[in-house]
Image (cartoon, rainbow, N blue to C red; front, side, top):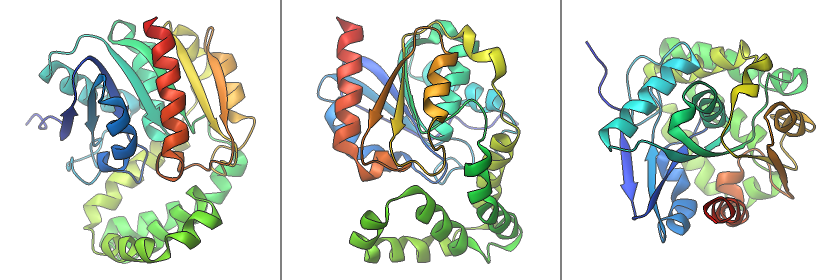
Length: 265
């Protein structure tokens, strides 16, 4: 049986731009950025397979995620699109641009690397272990969430939003084991990731966004990623951590709008 098209949302009018989620995100997390873009753009958001709003067995490869994203574009009759991806969504965007160049007009990727860093992966080891347990009976669901947000956000941001994160932790603790199996599938893809020379095939104008305080992909991961992509630009968002989409949406929106405006001109 063919899986249903990914759950998606479309807002605004104009040239299309596709926003691709990180691991623990849903498309709702893009709201402040989407609101700024939809003034002049047709903004497409989706949850990847295995994320909260697009249930079902997650693909075991980036190519499987790309095929699902392409189905969304086909459903919306979008031939070419500007792609913005963060974290895991950035990896999907990179693979899409490398293997389906006719579909990507420009590419903005952030909080990613060409391969997992030893430092970043070691920090995530206990998260992956908790995720494996939660994928069986969801008993460690709150542990997965709590450890991930500790890694993704600054201490100051977490302290400012303690009540909100406590509420979300309790909510995630109630998610079914299937959700954590989907998350685990993304971790498994990350563990085996190595773009190698693959990124040299990207022809779309590309911007690599680095979060200055990213603990998942610490410097110089972003600079190395930009060097591997022909003619890619590289920009640093100061003060931002891995969860820059949520923690620093205004700063990231400005970077996205500036790049898209220059590409349109």
